[in-house]
Image (cartoon, rainbow, N blue to C red; front, top):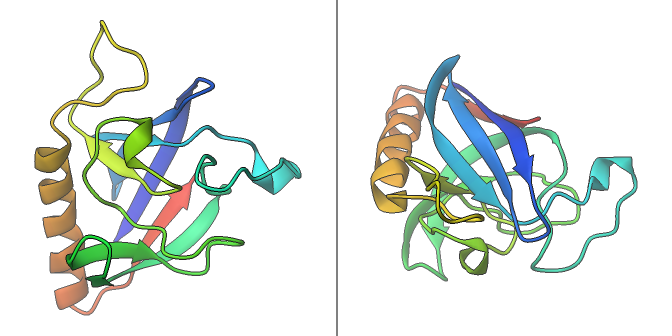
Length: 139
C-alpha cells in the first residue's frame, strides 16, 4: 500500500495536506508547520513537520495513547511519529492528524478526525494483515 501526503496549505501554525491511498483521495491531514528540514531548515522540537521523504509504516503499541497506532519508521531526527486523531496544531508534536475536511471559517483545523483516522487505520491494518508493506511519501 502506498500513501501520499501532498502538502498544500502552509501557515505559521500548521501544514494541511491531501492524503491519497494508492492514488485515490482518502482524506486531509494536519501537521506542524513545514520548516523544510530536507533543505536545511531548523527543527523546533514539538512544533515542526517531519521532513519530506518516504517512510515505512508499521502498527504497534503507543504508550502515550494506550492503543495500537500506525508509526512511521526511520524519520530523521524524530522518534515515535504516529498517525492519530486530532483536529488542530495543539494535538500534534510532529505526528500526522487525519480529517475528513477543512472548515471554511477556521484556519489550522480539520473536521471529523476520528472518522478519518478510523477509515485510514482500517486500510493500513488490512494491508499489513495481508502481508503487504505500507509506505507513506510526504511530498
